[in-house]
Length: 113
Image 1 (cartoon, rainbow, N blue to C red):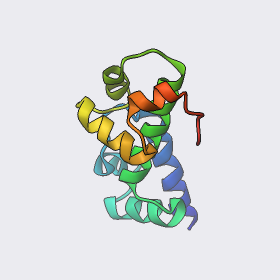
Image 2: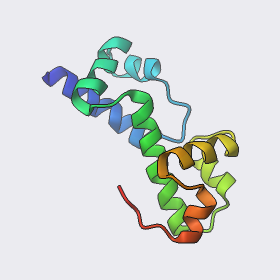
Image 3: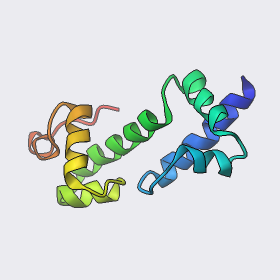
């Protein structure tokens, strides 16, 4: 379990730093000298999540912060948190936060982590 915790911590540190990049489980696994399967297990057992869900959570948290604290256009927020398509970002944000990014900003939603 210690090895899985170590892998999870190393992988999540990369995600926290590089969430705006095009991150893939396979590439992160190579960077931390693990197999794809080992890293999947680490996310499941240590984090109680999957790589994709963890990455989406980090991106949505950063997006909510940007929407709350800046006047950056939604399309720029989308790009700065790793989405190439603003519509894809808006759909993911709505699914995650229950409201579109523009409504979230207008409502001045408090940051729930």
